[in-house]
Length: 538
Ligand SMILES: [Zn+2]
Image 1 (cartoon, rainbow, N blue to C red):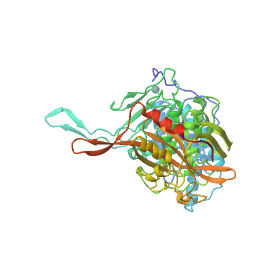
Image 2 (image 1 turned 45 degrees about the vertical axis):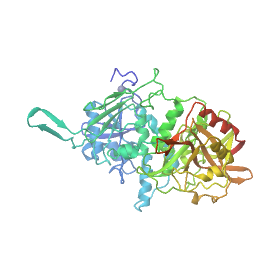
Image 3 (image 1 turned 30 degrees about the horizontal axis):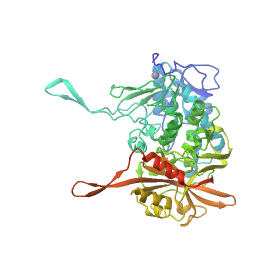
Image 4 (image 1 turned 180 degrees about the vertical axis):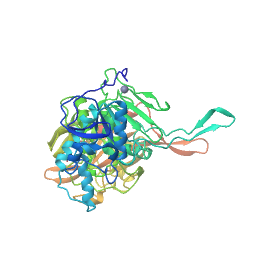
């Protein structure tokens, strides 16, 4: 470990405000300990009912006086034992060291089931949730109960891979290959993160995503073996998955990046959001709070003049706003779309979409696009990203889609002739180049729930952007106000140009991606031929 170039040495940072002191058979809750010492963090699933013991007004005295380790839920007990074996005297467990954090979520659930009542301290809780970044970042090690469903699951699994000896060759044996540990994915949008995570309950939780990302080093207790994950490498107990991460020379993306760490900051944040939005969030209103600690960390790695606005960054907003959504439920695509939540998130933010995976597919606005103005009022801590009265005014090339029926089917890859028919520039471009046009519309929300109501014939515009040689696309906005004229984002449209070719003697006709050297320029010219307008999106 000492020779890991990109890993911080054994940290003896100041202890968190509340932490457990470990002794031979008890744990003691220490408040504001004025000592510097290495400590460990526990990352775990609360499960539907939460751990049997939590820090509350009733238990605080008990925890101060010392709580028998043998009485702790199994996962906590196992974590204490791991600390003792590693010679670490302090352990931070959210349930026992943070009274307001996930407690509120838990109490909210109790209230929903009619079992208890709690004053809503949601604002405090949101602020506190964001400060968790420091706790995980400064811990010596994070102990992750990766395969446990709840605090009763424990760290150590009795499930071992199947091993069989060969009768005729007693010195040889065969062993079942253990499941591959889920890495952060780099292939978007095709990778089904949620589906692959089923045997790893901890990694399916959106709240836990930033705990893993922020930890300096994590020991994962899996179903079949133990894994090591740090800034330099990933290693498994059986050595089958050992790898060293790529890092740039100054380790700039050291603590948040994985795999290809030379990735630029813009793409890196978009990748984080793509992975994060694929995970389970019990309450959709937690979308921004549950990633706030990572936003705080990201801000420290970006230019100091950057501003975090509703999950997007001001310095890369033209790229950040070109997201696409796919509705999902546990990795199953195509479920009915959700209504747009009423909370204060601008329609151009990915956080305005519920229960959908967010991804970026390499679209860019033309260089001529200008941000005329960007207005917002920050609510609460900056890294929460919550804003009110947000609007962005863009001066850019637009394609009029008024009268086009694009709201059905909600998510599909279809040829939508209407778009070509109702948009003369697109139609003549396709005819001139003998091309077929394929469109897919990724709707942000269920348009039947739109306010004001969405109707066919509504004024619609596409803010044109391109994706290299074969596709034109972009954000689709509809007019929702006349004085002043305001627009709302309703989805992302992809228009792909294809050429029909005949194949062989049978004359079989098939579609091929059209590409030649001049192609990218032609799409650029098509965009430049569209009128430039100022569009205020709220
Ligand atoms: Zn390391």
